[in-house]
Length: 294
Image (cartoon, rainbow, N blue to C red; front, side, top):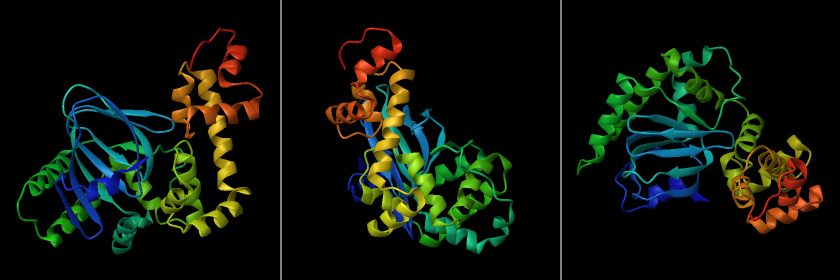
């Protein structure tokens, strides 16, 4: 999978501004239908300027058009661009540490009762309002300047945006997530794994998402789950593939891709090892409908 943050940060073709730990960038895709897997170790806002695109998480698909705003939590997702017009968006990447530092600076915001975010998806829709639209327009104008605006101004404007989000109830789902970033590492590891098990990430990538070294991650994982990351991932991916096999008419190749397996052949082997039949044989036996091809 492509590390979206690193790809944009290192691109010489993408207009961008880096300030402190924040990255603001104007992201443009070619006008062709594409399906790609992305991951990022930083959360980001996506302000859609033009075109149509879909972010697909493990559980849902979020289609966006001009004027829509998404907040994508750090982790992975599948991206589907449609062949209609050039897709362009302003991406704002924000590391966890920046949010934590902001909340330490504004401790009064942390007094709200702790909310359960276990049912939140990895992508959140953000309702546009006057302030958010104004903020998007100002960042868009900054990106077009030949001289970078003053760093303090950008930081202050971003803190102003965060304060506004915290003071509007309609953004509660988003701010609950921000507040959850102050919780312990075990909580975050569980959330990260449940939101990202179906993607073909390397163990070092999961560790990075959890802000741990690979060695620390493996040890903490074993203590939390009582098994190894590789064994847990294989089991969860097979469970997910099993549901898709019986609950959808997706081809086996697509199920393999959407459940994080290296390739279709590998998926067929491990599925047969667990269930005694190939995916096609299993679907046919349990649906009663003849199935041909993958």
